Amino acid sequence: MTGNELQPPTPDEIDALAQAAREGDAQALDDVIRLLRPRVLNICRGVLPFNPDAEDACQEALINIAAKIGSFRGTSRFTTWVHAVAVNSARSTYRRLKNQATPRGAGDDLGLERADPQTTSVIAGTRLDLLEAMDILEREHPSFVTPLLLRDVYGLSYNEIAAETGAPLGTVKSQVHDGRRLVRPLLRVSE
Image (tube, rainbow, N blue to C red; front, side, top):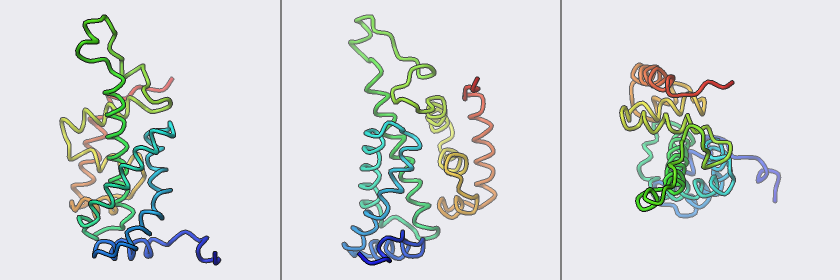
């Protein structure tokens, strides 16, 4: 290895690889997926701290990135778009795990208690109240979820979120503000 291979790629280099992959360069796609894997895994760990679950979500996210790279518009950094894909994959994995952990159907006839998502963690260490709040917000106001997660969980700037979502800056700020207002009563206060 040369000294350059040890340095992480710059955002411009990742954007260039993503553009080449978007145009059909298979080697660029392989390279961008390989380079993004650690970043995607860290994003997934932020939602799913149990490593095997985060690994599953990361794999799903990388598959989605590879499959949907043609839909990347190039109006923001590629890594901003990757954040949104990774967050959605982690949330999808959480929902799947939650559904597997919650007794349904015949189990209800056997007297099994339904898990209380406010007190029962299907994934150790996860903020269940936040994940449940995002699920409720998604059902009632789906356009608020991505801007709110990108701003408050991942710390992206309003400008980055506007570029990624294609929404005007004022709309993004409004969605984040309204999303916070709706989610706040659903979150437990830490004691």
